[in-house]
Length: 237
Image (cartoon, rainbow, N blue to C red; front, side):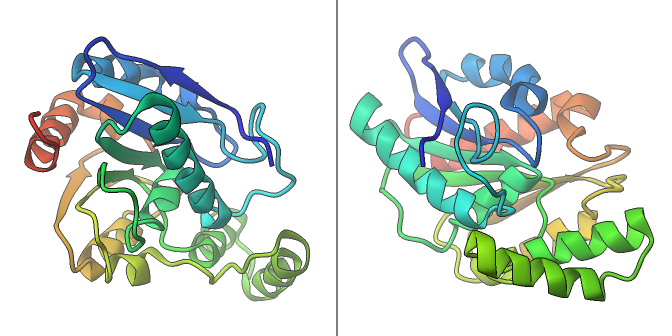
């Protein structure tokens, strides 16, 4: 599987942030306005097209399950190509879940923390929510069929990953962010993951923010929270 991404280096970098965009989205839509902020912190930016997005290959989107394994490849690629700068893993929506699914795994020592903005708990949970609240039809028959399809054709299960189980064994500090007015991924999914987390954790809930709009709605609070979090876990920050 060939994956495509972009490397945006910083002068005299203090670290690298690896960004994972959301379902059927792009890095420019999800992070374009944040690039200036992260560069102002002295961060290199490594931003892949997730599998089956943009120029990256892949027939199926797996809601963060296999995408999280792809991110491990990107971490190794970064370390082998650009050096072992201390790294932040960050994602939005499906990208947030993609990164959180790595929280319990043994990663290279230069990976320091995770920032997850408006992620869902599991593929099954978000599909159930979409069908009940958006499509307004019973989700049971669809979920059974979708899981069967996923197992047979995409080699994963809708119940294979769950942030609550992963974060219960978290090895990395996590900052979890969600807009309180998110009508696509319920804010409660972030709250559930946060409550289950047994590691170092912080939570930012942004009033009036919808799905993926916390940075836009309250940039000052968002950036101050991120900076304070990074000061705790990055070396010489």
